[in-house]
Image (cartoon, rainbow, N blue to C red; front, top):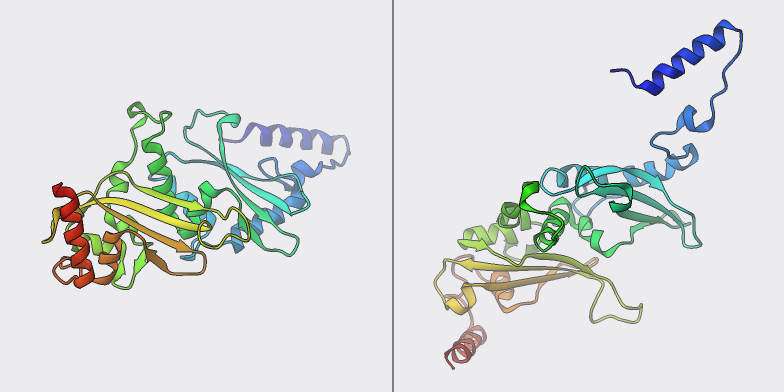
Length: 281
């Protein structure tokens, strides 16, 4: 079907030619799309072509994949108002196709004068880890979001419970999702993937990191108070490897899958015994 604007343009052009009048198009019709000024298209193209997640994916690849598993409807790109710190390039998306403009969400990159770019909204920072991390973070938020109901096909909990979607977390023993599968673990809730920014530049002990938290049931030999509703927490500072934070995460990152508690060392055995005594009181 021919776009109505194109049809009117063609009709106008024919009339102008018939009367010997040359038509000069305004900049908006001559070279821009989606309401973006032509001089700003270069900024958007730079984000599309240059920015990469840590696994090499582009923003558009991530958005396309996430839209297939989460309530994520891409709306479009635009350039925001220039500030002293740079120019924002904004990607808009909505949870529902019927959402109006004032109900949209945005992912914003700040383009610094030196040419560097960074995502500024903490909620969107998981996409720097790749599409699965971003999808998990959005779907996990949907679990507690009253705006998404069963009438809208529900929340994709199956995605949250699939160990393969957590392979973006790597350990000395291998990828987390593969380790959970080999350890006969099922993922429950809550599930979380979050980015915690620094409170200030002097802060070094906490913040400015990604955190992944899972609740799992693992059918493996060992104390049930660790393997049932086990808490797995990994954290990653920018430029560093993932580090286990919870006790169960440290066991998973140290020992062979399925034999986590059988091969545990003396210190770990002490922790098992301490946990048993606490639960027996």
